[in-house]
Length: 479
Image 1 (cartoon, helix red, strand yellow):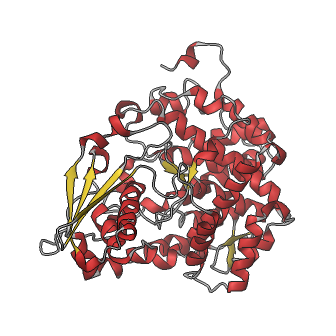
Image 2 (cartoon, rainbow, N blue to C red):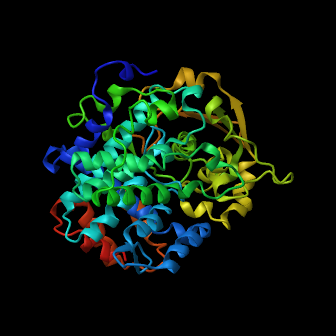
């Protein structure tokens, strides 16, 4: 049992609720507001093309569009408006589909996709909302979601965590925080809203099962939950207090009391876990990024040509080993789905070796049959590396084991590179210009064309969001 249940310490939910309700824009350091603006631009960008590149996403979005309803919030790049919770779902369901979303590596889940669709939808419903208000709502929500994840991660073990997928289990509370703040709920109303969202808490790792296609859609469900919870609290519905740290709350019931109270509430408002947000330069499972980075580095540093590569060894500890299954074209052991490919280190390394870059176009259903990529992937071999095992290699706040790649060429030369912190990692941060480039790449695949002029105007407004008086100016450009 966690010590909080047996002491006079204040239960954590009201502390969290006060932070959500009472934090002002001026209390957010510039380094944090810059991080929030990048998260907003990045998240909008990856949402827009997802349904075009991933046809599986269209049925749930179409379902909500067919049902219709009050036209109050925009389905980005679809040219339609829906009730705010439906628009949140239709935007959020696209957030993780490309495996391109920002995230917190110690918390081990994506962040912006659970928060930003809810904030945008309720901002439209509300009317005139300034850029500063949006930054604040997103910021307090992302900070709380990051801290929830870290508090669980620092007490995590197989027994305490059980089967839970933390992005789903905790995502409801991030979305609720954003929605509550956007609706100007006070601290008690916010705590009540979190209690309502608690009714929907769940979600296990079964979502990544190879025969299902819903893994990338979870943010739509948590976003909708958060919006409805906040709206109900605004209407006077009284959710249970203490939904996080009480005897019958989330931590005790779902996680056997295994959470770090200090990581959740100590220095809340003066220190920001959000500074450790990472951004993905490549649309693949995060565990593949150290290998992609190493392969791209080898290719560049040694001017390696694809036709000269004879063998590629990837060195892996226990954590990444399941993603290193060999590819064998003749035996039919090739990625069958986009999800399979994104979680295949041989496939990712092969794309990097062959093309010198990794883009979301490399994971479309058509691209999975690229013979050149598959033949390169057959050259990738796993080398067990116990020194990379979770227990010996993880560092506080990192949570990605290193990736090591060795390439042997047709001249018998072997080149080796190890990456500890891949590009985009918070300890090797992505450059602003690469966030912008990623946004432009994504917008090019919008379901409804967005002009370069409008695209560039969105970029300018989001990067200077504190100067925007009404964020509907941005949303209309993306409608």
